Image 1 (cartoon, one colour):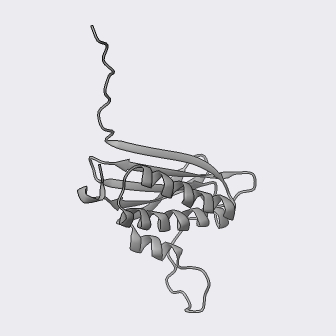
Image 2: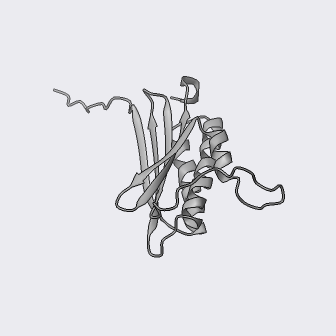
Image 3: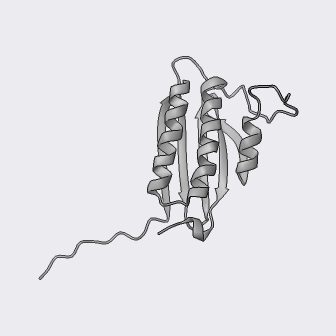
Length: 150
């Protein structure tokens, strides 16, 4: 009798979660880790590029605007192959500071466009409470079948 190795079905979902320091270095690392993970999941370059920009903006906002001394921020990536959705979520400790896209940004301003970029790149985005006192800002990208390389 020959023993057989059990075969796992193709994963219908992938997930990644990492705590990072609430610093600019932590935000940069979030972007690098996300890109590596999304490449490993076999997503198309166009989806990875959009997600990379979204992670960069949300992580930078968590490090700059959501920072609480001694507290980290969390990056969570989730790919639901069946639903065709990639979700990027960044949670920080500042639930009292909810993000909102700037109504008008002066052309010479060096900041204030991050959430406008997220809104342009994502198919959906929003915020939700992150207990006990934080918030999660998430963005979703629709990933159609050709974006999922087997």
